[in-house]
Image 1 (cartoon, protein in one colour):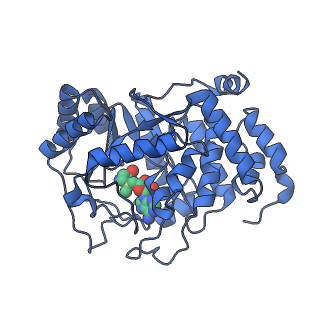
Image 2: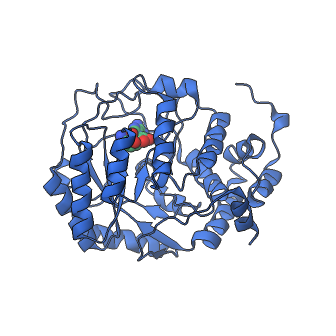
Length: 365
Ligand code: SAM
């Protein structure tokens, strides 16, 4: 697509629209997402001011367990896609998941995030039982990231006590979504998010940055759609090509482009929880710290049992905390401290913001 530059505001005006809480529009999102290197510090500073004013200096830590790398899908970008035969597949048992969650609580985390490929072995009932056992034996908030399932399954998981659900839309551009997902459907993925929202889950979504064929206009369109959805947690990271996938030779995303998106999301969603993602840390040693200094306020340390961790290889170069989870936590807290931030001691539930008008008020408070 050839951009019509007359549609786009100069950087300073675009930033003003964001700070005024204007409804997200291409005219100001695109200039912010593509801003010059010289303008980026002003964008990050603005995002940091909004972050500090609305969600404060706390960083929320979520203990992540990657419970299975079996997947029924064949997403073109993903290292654990069904068609990748080189993957050593693993699935944690319900007992091991519950024990790991209890370990996460003992380490001092207040949220467990359970993520997996779309592994149908975890039926609605099996997973509901895992959730119930975690809720009965810990005080953890429970976040799920288990992909697309039917509404009845989501309902059972919610009734079992799950608090939050993360399901990235990946891209809202129909042609790009179709090219990346040979066995998936954009409207069905959207429908999953609407169902999750309806069921009262705290709702997380997001996209990858630097997908082949993704333009700034597409990314801006994603932001607009996520805003209409009312997402409350926004996870974004650079696309990192995996050599054993159809996109192995693609260029991939950059830390710089992703930081711009993190900052824009903070401006558009003042109260949201924004993780500094593992993909950011995998692309650059300071990637996550830089995201925390561009509007992010969540970290998700990987507490997957070390014996299987390496097999959840979505992309090459994925970073892990050390195998000693106590030392790893201390190190993470030291890093947070070093950038002048604090570690939240609460569950870190999202603050619900009802409508656009409230968002606008939030900006002008
Ligand atoms: N199956 C669940 C789902 O689809 O939501 C959760 C697991 S999925 C592997 C988690 C996320 O990993 C995806 O939403 C995608 O954005 C990200 N991911 C997969 N491959 C990636 C890659 N090559 N580079 C960066 N992120 C990737």
